[in-house]
Length: 236
Image 1 (cartoon, rainbow, N blue to C red):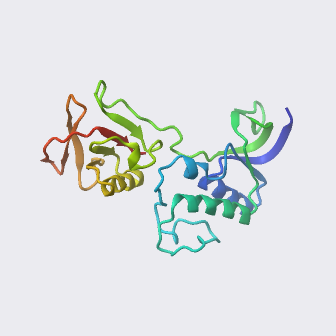
Image 2 (cartoon, rainbow, N blue to C red):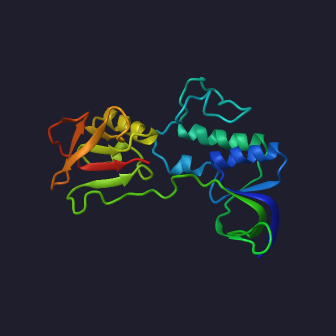
Image 3 (cartoon, rainbow, N blue to C red):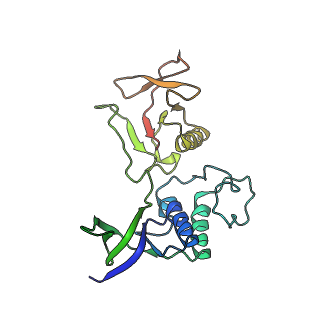
């Protein structure tokens, strides 16, 4: 297997990898970005269908390039975000190599640098930047062992309301993913309960779980009648 040498290797060509490439180029640092799939792959295939950016277009963008044909206050859909990343990488001539998966990274012994084995070749680099994202290994704990009729999935696997069977839904987590998904499920006609953290307002928590797999939910300490929640979706 051939060996390639580069000063800095960036692993991942999502928003972090593309942004890092822009900074390294600005600073005159020779580098290479490797991506096992396509640029912004997670935005295309590993998020729900209706996902939009967390902030408005004027805010959630790279320096020197606005979203085309988009109002500054609009929240951009995931497909347009992914296309924007590709266009930006092209604009800054980012050295992105797609279809290359990193298999192993080892620190060189006795000298500076790393030896990286990829699906294509071995790369030796002085620096390695892991830009693979924070949510690539979703955790779905067994919160209700032995429950009957309870579907439990992570937002990483959720696509749209039609994916869930009939019944109420408990969304655990009130970050950007949880709130967006809870709103979509509510607008689709499902009964939705949103569990938020102890420091958020309104405060909410799970009160109990019935033997049939249903959940009781309370908000701001005011108990509500028990309603069967046959689906539980854990957000990131």
